[in-house]
Amino acid sequence: MKKIILVLAMLFLAANVVSAKDYIVAKKAGGYDVVMAIDKNPPVVGNNNVTIFVKDASGKNVTDARVVVDYSMPAMPGMPPMNYKTDAVLQGSEYKAVMNLSMAGPWNVAVKISKAGKTAIAKFSIDAR
Image (tube, rainbow, N blue to C red):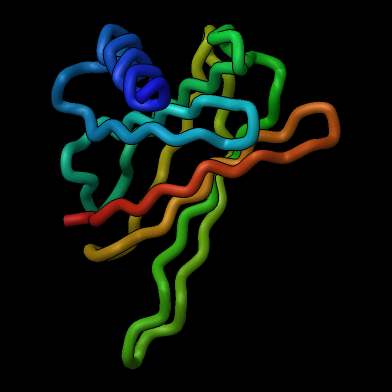
């Protein structure tokens, strides 16, 4: 029950910063709460602007980590898997990146947060149209 309330609170806080049309997902990664907002809902083929909010266990914004977004599409008949990576850049208290999704379909997204020699990973699945 506590986790549900925490996720709802994170979504409410993130909704105050991003617009209502964004695609928003939230996960825990190690000791971090991670919220990822994509500027298109649903995500589309081509450029999708991503905003990532990272908070520590006390709810404080994490602004001294390296954040990388790995996104991939699994292999399909007649097509090899596709793997891409982009660094997220800190702007204020949020991290920004652009994912260029090369085709419609299911994508796996891994937000990797590295700080003090440790890496935490939040994994999401999205479906590009």
